[in-house]
Length: 458
Image (cartoon, rainbow, N blue to C red):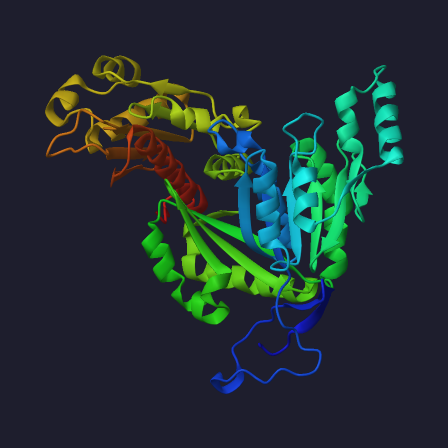
């Protein structure tokens, strides 16, 4: 039990807790006191639908619910997917009864023969299904509003588990249900994401908020480009000691590492803790952090910098085949700073469009520092821009050699005062190499813009 914890409430006969921070005094945890918290609310999700067991449908509802649980500091202890099988549904619900405080079941509440979640849940809790005239009247009214009459099988949607509360569905004909059994609160929601979202906002979120005692979890994400995951992890070692490793997650993807910071507790406490964590991580990672948040990429950050400083950029691309230009133009308003690109995949095009000397190509090859520099300078001349980026490399799977293996990429950035070069060796398949090459080029430009003329920090 950590000092400073505060009681959260009671659910299903159990006392649950919210975490506080800081090591135990003297290395020994204090003895629990009267009113001390025992554990966090435990939640589980059961997604019902045979289509979710195939390869063409994703269970996005569980992701939405997991985010909501985290927001209210509820511990998600399990997720499961079962097909439209009454016995399987009953078995999975029965397995969770008494083992979690909250169980959210999605899907299987429609009118068709394979919608058997109501039946499975009723069997699991040992209660009958009863016809509810008010629910049926609401279904009839909904159909009448569209000039239709419900089919006989829609009557199945008016069946309610004995003792359950009906949760109206404003966006569909399948109402939800809320019931308690064996110390577990069970929500049954339709599986259609549009319908579930509204019911989660109206029914589940307030239910969680009312039992969280104001406690919750928040996240902030810091993003770095073209720095190895192992280096980021090593640099964060002091933060792990200061804030505990479990609250800091390092997530790697091609050309990028995200550092996700999490804090739990009451709003003021977790906000202050997150602010301290962000400040410390920024100190440790420095200029390698290019942005914050989950939305937007490096192209957005670079675009904002160019627009704010009234600078322009063009690209000359070989192995990326226009990917760098495509990323720059994803950003709305990019025409303010991006006039165009030259995709010169072949040597003849490098000569004709970018002015790369033919003898340079013959002597050094297309994948070389000399050619990358010439490409960048040619693009800068052609478009009359402040900066020009060039990318030439071997994306594979063929074309590599012992001297220049697949993944060899040369980057160049031409500006008024100088032309910078960087060589990288990238790992992965063709698409990963191309993406990382575009990421490296954007990061090269970001660093140069931030440094200003003649003081590139890259």
